[in-house]
Image 1 (cartoon, rainbow, N blue to C red):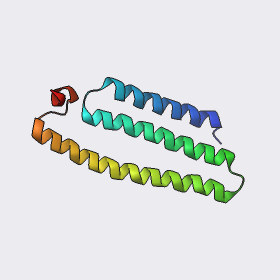
Image 2: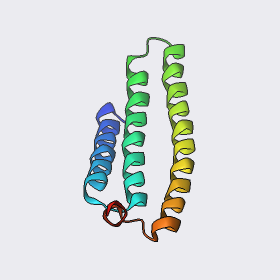
Image 3: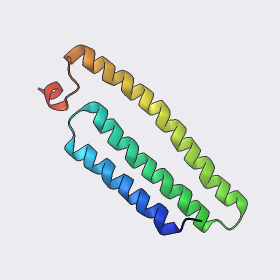
Image 4: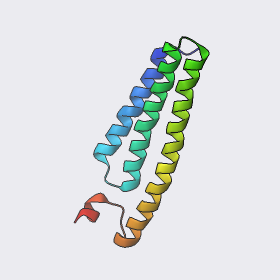
Length: 102
């Protein structure tokens, strides 16, 4: 079994990588990827801590179900965001945020 610090270190890595991408990148697709990485890190944390602090099987199941709903929400949000990105590209012929704002 993988210890708790292994999962938490992966989560910290995903969160910091996502934050780095959001801060440094200018393209809309890269920004969405960074936000998704941060959401995956939060989901991983939720699953790890639900397993750690669960007193019975139903409490552990609640964390898994909540994480599943977060993933479903993430998929729906990304489909809408990609549609908006395509619309922005059609109107501005670029996905660079600096070009769109001027």
